[in-house]
Amino acid sequence: MRLTPFTKLRRFARDESGISAVEFALIAPLMVMIYFGCIELSLMMTLDRKVTGATAALGDLTSRSSTVSNADLTDIFEATRMVMQPNDMTGARMRVSSLYEDSGQVKVAWSDGCNLTPYSADEVVIIPANLIPTAGTIIMAEIEYDYTSGIGYFFSSSKQLSDKFYLRPRRVDSITRDRTAGSFSCAYTAP
Image 1: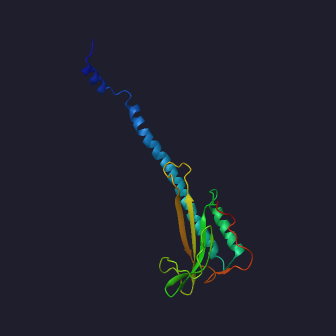
Image 2: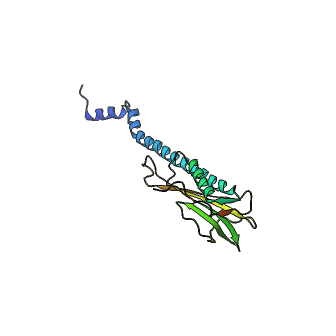
Image 3: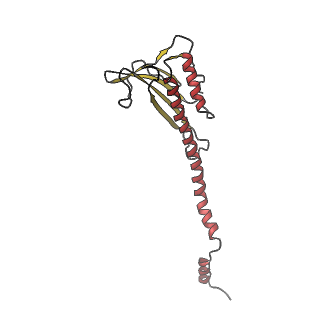
């Protein structure tokens, strides 16, 4: 019995064998893209949490002192770098500053940076209101880090991860910066 083209077309339309393979072939590329996108996003989020932890450590270690010498600051920056391990910290930019309030303006008492330009003394900075206690200071710690994806499909350009922490000195009202003894070093340099 010979089938007409119309009959063949009807049989083909009713035939459901292999439909799962066709559905899988249509959905698989989308699922693979979502999977790798989630991996890439989770890597960036993990590093962002490390930047936050390192910024908190930078501010916390500084706020525990009553006087910060060059050697102390070198050790503080090195300890902050260790928080980011095993990530490469050579590209991180860090700055720690002591801020005070003068006639309603927040000014810099002292500032030091590691691959990030320090503020100049008495420079006015903008921070959230009511952070500085009367006749006291706060420590502002900042870190910036450029995240470059290892996969590079979804985040083809680098993304800047940054954080800023404000902490009050723990032992004294104002932490002094002693620049006379020794020399300050970041303990690493940016490439």
